[in-house]
Image (cartoon, rainbow, N blue to C red; front, side, top):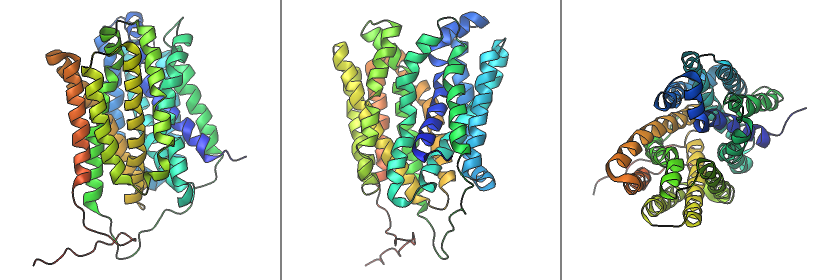
Length: 387
């Protein structure tokens, strides 16, 4: 029995995001149980993120060697193994040693899943499948926060088992049910892709993910300190706001391939303005949650357009392009977390909003640059002769 591609890729991306999410709400419990500081426990995310970034850069070579199906199975196996090792780790050192495995699995699944969204269906169904693939990540936040709160009452170790391990096993069954990959796309003779288009896209992704990382890492602390809510209520509010990502992705997918650059610019600027208002205006808790949901909507639409852009620009190197995107995500999140912490230390949360807004705006700049026209096959047309 072959599982449909949409739920298979949805759950695979859910597993990748769950691997990122699992330690975040339980850092104090990990620190107390294993005898380290909360700051030291926070470095678990740094370790897995660095491993993910390095792995993502080799995604193209891995896909050429294994194919997308086996690449996904490898990534899911790494997530499952890393999650199991994390749950069983008797010391902080061994817990930290499991994180490169988790990070490598995350990057492999992210790059492989985005590539599969283009390879497993005809072009007419690509936008729909890409939309369902992308929403697997925010769904992990929406579902994961309450689940972690329920299962970790006795021990933080259950966070690794209930989310990434279970999701990775389920996704593996779906991926394994699919037949072997077809032959890889071959570039037509005499064609070449627009290198500056891909470079601009990668730079825009790095800047945008840095902005998003600055917002996301400190979102819980923002609600706790600015709105004076409990940690439990902050997690609930974040889960409610994260639901905005789903309609942002699914409602805009029909326009993503036809209006990629316009969406990248428009929703990038919308995110820039929204995050500045979010962090600077004196708002009640309900208003701030609503505004964060609007930001999530803009991020979802922008993510959909960015994925469509990368797949469109690199029809013969999709895994490599999606690997670059996964690396930009990890490096951007790490850089954004560091820059966001510095902004809060110097100017509080308003400074964080200005920083994130500026990074979102800068992320649109590469897509405003003029590009040389191409033929439908990707052949560069000659530049106009000087007058």
